[in-house]
Length: 467
Image (tube, rainbow, N blue to C red):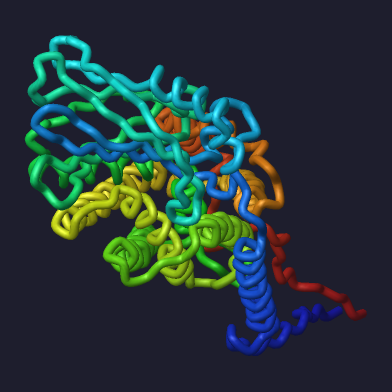
């Protein structure tokens, strides 16, 4: 009796296809065409849609002060859409100038505006006038302000203002000062739901003060800008992974992961810095509604990319391309300050520095947890969940900013998250630590997630006996 060992024939290796010529490349090309058409449709809808009171969801209030020897005058520019939300009234550019409504709104602003010496001595405050101005494509109600000190001589004082922001927590008030004899305004700072009072130097803020205030403004603009933060999070989600055969898999090299994060953040910084500088200096401009709608679209696309790679290895290009749109939105904030060229340069540099510092802080808070979590079996579900939430929020923003919805029903969700950033980062760190502490949840050899998911096959010899 003899025994023969038969080994099953091995399957011939599949020929490797060029990513740009295979089915995946054709699918990516179709997706790119679809996204391009969607972007064009979004721009067309935002341009052709009729002007509405809530067309600019991220508009801010601006207070522009002029210091004279005996009094401080100026104006306050209130976005009508935000005013309507804060007062829960259907205000429009036509209704706010009706005599009875205008008088009521003037009393409202006066009740939320005051000035006082550092020791608490109150100044006389007046709010007069009332007219509608279109600023950066958004209708604003503009009132004149006047503050007179009790001794008749203007000196340093403290301004307190909380109109709109006392009900609308995401709102911001930008305060600028033009001292007597100066031709341009200098940024003093920003007021929000946490800070209602700001120091006003009567002699004017120095360039260093304006630079520091601009840095603070950039930090707070990103820290309290839910859409910009969400876009950054969507970019970071796939950073620890590699795109293979149209799917995300673990990346084998930690150094390479960190390099990809640096590339993504740097590309976004370069993109928004270019348009921020060009737009703030007046070289380029775009309708606010188009810009804000494209920002929502950028979150939507990045969320889809975090679920399934649309442009494998092209995260940096996505970050740079959409960073150009975010830069235009940043510039819209500075343009509302009506700064002189000298003050604008210092404010521009400081504002951009504040943005970069905040982005680096977000990366430092989230990326270690994402790197640890990406080495566990929990990450695919976590990534899918976070990306899906981002897509839903972006779709709601897009519908509101293209006037398809009168208001965003999901706005309380991102507002609640940005009010507790360290709680969110701590929760993510806890999930990452808990997942890593369970050996059964850790993935195998990095880079082999796809192989690990397939049934393990062995080439056992098949024995047959012949008699």
